[in-house]
Length: 482
Image (cartoon, rainbow, N blue to C red; front, side):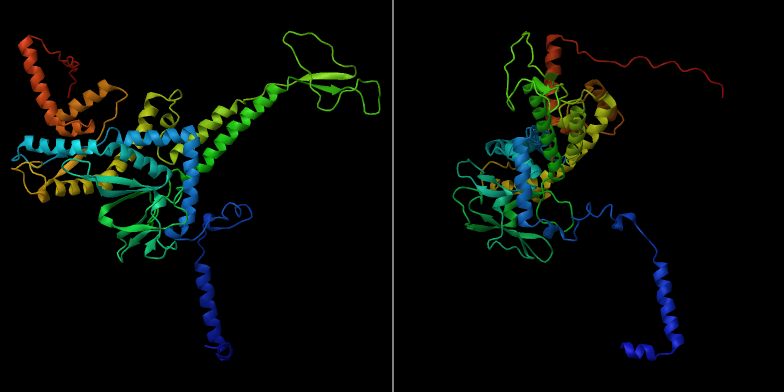
């Protein structure tokens, strides 16, 4: 409809349409303060964008963030300690396989497979590789594990090689919709293959060489930190805390510098005479005078002496570092007492509350490790083990029918007696099993029972009476009339 035809329409019709438009406009009155741009918040929101997850995390952006986080982890003791503690708390001495093939399967056969998998994991140093993978996820945002064949191993020669995020990049250097910086996805958003560079781009021999090879997705274990739907490459977990770590180090250096300056200048001489007066002794600009301990001296005529006041380090330095470190640790759900290794300001209740959140995050991370690394590795191990005579004993059901779980290192309780009483109560009221409790401590419940049976038998043989803690008498209840 042209502009001329609009004005040729009856006036009443034009008025009706205009009134409807005004009515609709007046209906949409919803306002959110967060959506308003004012003179007060313009600078604060100036960097906000509308980019997709992959566009916001372009190769150059991720490369810059990775280099800065790595630098901070390498030079900031708090950042380095947080990454190291996270890896050790998460992985510990490494996961242990526990098979659950039903009551009709000989437990000794299951135990034989479990030990074979454990021996293989020790040979390939799996626990150490998983700890390094977690540190890389914190500082790089992602890590790649490439399934390899290690001919130095006896029996199963399966191995895994860790590759840094920099070494997975688009072969032509220009990512596109299907190739997200070296990771190719199908129409369903599932990774199909990875371009792994032959050399790290930062090595002395790489230069601009993009030489590499395509690796099928089934042979790549890609563990990355994602925060948005549609995100295909990882962002370092410490990204929100990087500038805070920098502020912390800058404030510490400034405090030390101020203290050094105050210590270097023992005193300052200032003239007591006006510029037009004469008679004061001449002292060259910035002239220094040695000061000996316990000396008594006179100052030049026409001058007064002022001693530097010791004001550094300021009393707020400790408080500033505490608050800033607490904010940094929040980025990875780590309590301050763990990040700082300082529980002097905490009490029993607050420590338990902080650890609940931290250990919940550890449980989620362990589930990711099992999904990304352990389960695929176990399936690949079983495929090779089936070709090695005697490694998988006869009498076991087909592998497709197997059920398994992974046990991890447990956490020491702040009050071991209360924990033991709670576990005994859980077993007594059938809300927990011995297998579940042993799994929390990375132990095999069958081995625990066998060992206890041997110990009890030896105690009876030696005439040792076991020490059993019996609960005290229940408090008497008063008779209350109905």
